[in-house]
Length: 454
Ligand code: FAD
Ligand code: NAP
Picture 1 (cartoon, rainbow, N blue to C red):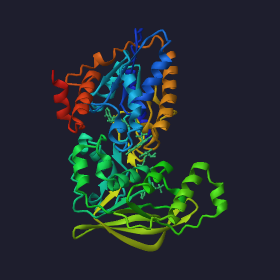
Picture 2 (picture 1 turned 90 degrees about the horizontal axis):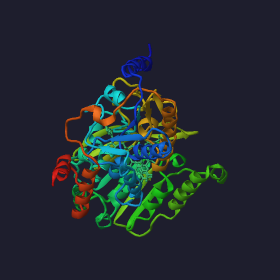
Picture 3 (picture 1 turned 45 degrees about the vertical axis):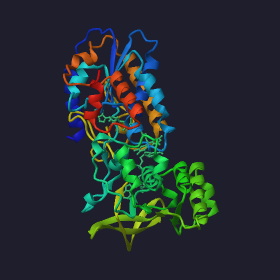
């Protein structure tokens, strides 16, 4: 019997347990996770159910005391305009049919069985809380991009990450995605430009004393395959007093360029043109883009880290190893090769290899749905996450229409949660405190103390 079939058997038993049939005054729905997927699913579901006979009560569970997921803890502090989505999300929180329940970790404080008993529909939007790995010996010498991003954004779990930039000159970033460019930009941006943003206070202090002058961004494939986007690349070539070196011998013919989809064509042209306009002045700091290199070996040599790369050649879209290698020394190395989802409930199907909850257009099994990075994998921007969440909300709404006469569910009250959770008014206290002090709270204890002040 396959692993998924066994897992499905398990979840069917959980669901059977809750099949008591009589009518309920509300449709109780919960969303697990308060990132963009959770908020957009909630927003759309509220809209779709606004004319239905049975009112919707929506509970949004979040493991942290505060909402917004990667908008608060991932999006770079120098991208405040992206964080404006918080205004839309706040209007969802203020809806009288929505209850935010923070400081509650699904899978730990509440089981799947409890949720199934309490809700007509459960939407799993808990993102991707782990890393894709290189699976190399000594990988512990490499800093996780996810943890570093959490560190500079003040994520409580990463606030104590040991980061010492003072003694560093060269940083090496593995991966050619937008997270890699976020990290490169933060390392090369002057500390004064980050002042006044929501960067963690300790991170700003560390960046102020940083010795980093050189950032190498190394990808395993070619110019045509980079995963970052044009806006983020453009920001790199516009960094004040920062030079660059784009090390590619790729010759891309005009006909190849012409045949590319529009966005890829514009990005490729910009990369190639930037190669020609390499800065001639002697800038304070610089970044280098290197291609066709797969990390193969990581070593500690004195105080430095040496990463040995296998040099690849491209065959179509595939990187094929050659017999050549290159060793690059650095003072700090980052693995920025993508996030990875983790299993939350042992009694729900989960694909360990991809880190995704298997689903059919968002539906996992009857009454259980997923959207955002938990169901789609760790890719896509806020806009694409929104589109996916809207689609899944539509499916949930359709299924709620067909569930008239289904079992009585009583939502949050029936869960018997006894520990101190946070609600919207607690979040408001935290937000007001942060706005008054100009500093993000970076520990859960501090946040809870602020919540409990009268
Ligand atoms: P998340 O935002 O990760 O939200 C998941 C939520 O679930 C979190 O709040 C988490 O705390 C919570 N959670 C986890 N486990 C549990 C649990 N057990 N119980 C309860 N709650 C739980 N997109 C853009 O458009 N522009 C950008 O500038 C941009 N910058 C980015 C920068 C970085 C570093 C990263 C990684 C991504 C960025 N993105 C950006 C992409 C964007 O952040 C994602 O598309 C989006 O956040 C995915 O939403 P999500 O709700 O699926 O996941
Ligand atoms: P990503 O876009 O998937 O990029 C991952 C990079 O790592 C790719 O270059 C990939 O190369 C490489 N890689 C993967 N496995 C590797 C391995 N084993 N060895 C070497 N290299 C490997 O991931 P991300 O940068 O974490 O971003 C995640 C999502 O968030 C993306 O959709 C991104 O656009 C979004 N995001 C957006 C913004 C923004 O809008 N400003 C900012 C940050 C993140 P291959 O292509 O060869 O696999």
